[in-house]
Length: 175
Ligand SMILES: Cc1cc2nc3c(=O)[nH]c(=O)nc-3n(C[C@H](O)[C@H](O)[C@H](O)COP(=O)(O)O)c2cc1C
Image (cartoon, rainbow, N blue to C red):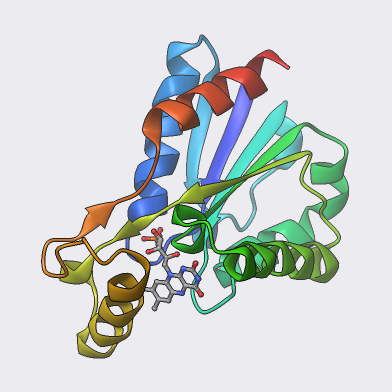
């Protein structure tokens, strides 16, 4: 199959996830185009059998490039198998309110674009203090200090469950 792996990212973690997933997809015998959705203008989705899209949550929204792309291609996306990876720090925890928030953010995306992903997975992201400006570092350190009191606030931390991600993508490719 020919598969589009498109992503939006703020500090690069979702790009890392998208690259990883693209490599896995190639290793399973498929051909892949890896694309930053900010550069999706003019892309012909008809060339692809499936689409795997990924974006991260920043202040309760996904990257604008995802919304723009999904709105423009909604009818084609709805007619093909799609998997959406929603990357956030909320998904690293077990707080009910956080998880309800993730559902709302997804519902907002669907309402705004008309795209309903065939399958969705909430993926725990990463804390990357070295990539934040002073204000972001301050805000994120406070959030992490509450959510993960054992974390070293200067070192950063990757919360993504990579083996679970591999299993998910493998399963989706087989379906
Ligand atoms: C400025 C900023 C705002 C964020 N807002 C949220 C948020 O509202 N909810 C959440 O769960 N995670 C939030 N995060 C965490 C990111 O979703 C997480 O760090 C993710 O791994 C970022 O992926 P990226 O590097 O691809 O953008 C935020 C991170 C930053 C830097």
